Length: 286
Image (cartoon, rainbow, N blue to C red; front, side, top):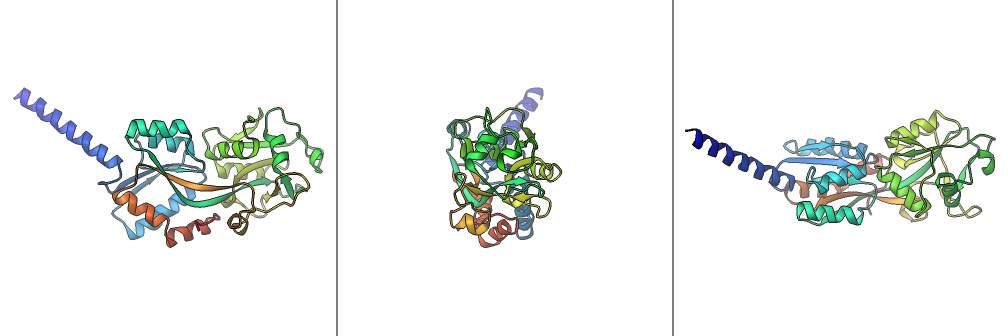
């Protein structure tokens, strides 16, 4: 009897393991685990709530610990959908293929103007990509607001933690291969960046356009170089490709989505979910 009981436990455990694997593919289960971008966390929660009203039998779990964490979880089979504000790196693609047997698939679900925020009392109205690189890059040459026509105050440089997709996108778009300077005040979330700038008169920070708080912070217009025409972050300027630091908002799956995951992604790309993108201050897909 003990032997038969042991065999039964082994078979049951094997069956449970197979069920878990099937669930992680997003094909047969009504559960979808979403992880990733802090920039997209408000979107992801709003999508989940709206989708739950039309598909109450689908259980969607949402986490927002950063693009890097979401991609890592997808590559390890710990979630079905990874939200990201940056593209996948080659080693992340290889790891996903190695662990899941599937190539990662990228889905564009919206666009974001990465905004540069200052305190409303700051006299500046615009800044260039070159100047941002000299503020945020290693061995910075711009460390006082007076160098930019502002008050004689040391610039308080606010950034994101290095697991953030926004952190990596900003570095690539602004500084190229140049590393970040030392002694930035790294915040854990997009909302935290804006709140810190709102309470610190000498601060500068970057975050998604959807986190803007008019009256509490100011978004600077951006130009490529000093003296060139500057462009404000807005839906129109993202659509006409004139705003220089625009990025796609992405969802990644391991392989082509199936079942409830496929249905959910198709809904996200549809009119109702894209209206939520616009309501959150981002730009719907064209």
